[in-house]
View 1: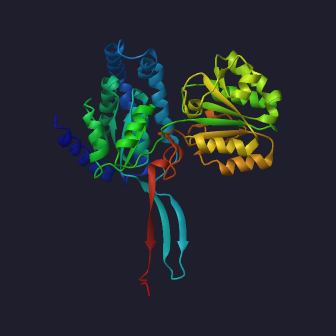
View 2: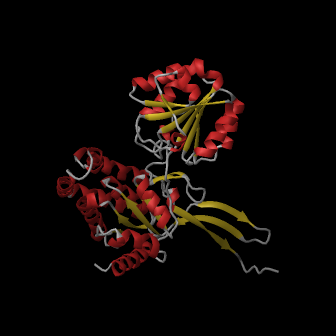
View 3: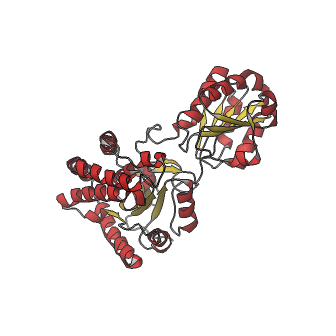
Length: 418
């Protein structure tokens, strides 16, 4: 395969398709999404068979955890269908008037939400992403180019073919969704560095290695995050029982997600009143605890933390604990080590709460809540395409609104500038 020729052809197809989906009404887009549901349901058995083939090919090559991510059974398939139904129920993010400003000369200036255009999605072996990413991009009026993991090639191909059939059945351009049908890694490099004329935004979905490669290689704007080094700060004014409950959930509910707490900061004035119960709950939950020297002195059974621990996203049942001298010390630590994802303060002190929420520059800041709520669905945004930690364009959970941009529309009646 000539990678350059193949991908440039995909790019041209996507540009044309983006022009055709952009003007569709909400009803037309929702009708297409309902048609996708019908096609997927009709093709369920063949899609699950393709998934079984992928698993057979990978069983002895990848870990059980990766196999579980790759697995698509009837229950998970139904979950995919429900996620499409959820997107159908969401408000259309396109065509909304975000600002109206009538000028003294009679001109009316409007800021209106519009699709981004062509979105490239690079992701690892989770079949649901193939559908979730596609329907979100579609609802926001974009065409999409997908590049999934090689382990999931047969499943992804079956899913994409089923969805493309929905476009054909409704006489729409099937290239609104395209899948890169090669496992050659050179395709990813070309996509990231050489398709600036075709792709408007790249969204990486996967582990740190994938995201870092995308961020380091891409010459196209990237929406995403590299690390989820999330902090919870326990202030001395917090209620001990509430603090224990929140910390336990933030760390142990699901240790492998980007919103899991990795570092716990504890006010030195509440070590004796708060920390024993927190450590007991974490230990009972099977969590390995690494603490600074003060923490280690008070709790000899824990491991000593190193400088590297403050920089580590464990994605496992491990937590690092640092004793800090109040809110300012906590803020300094977060400023130095945070990855800009999510931080939470547990406190009843109004001054400290507002200082924390206003000073921390992460995409998501919380008060008296578990960092595990860092999720578009939990925020009432519906499905999300990922979490973004950059400061430009979308931040935090990226849902439909994050897949749009805006333009200014100026309505005049013959005005000229003096």
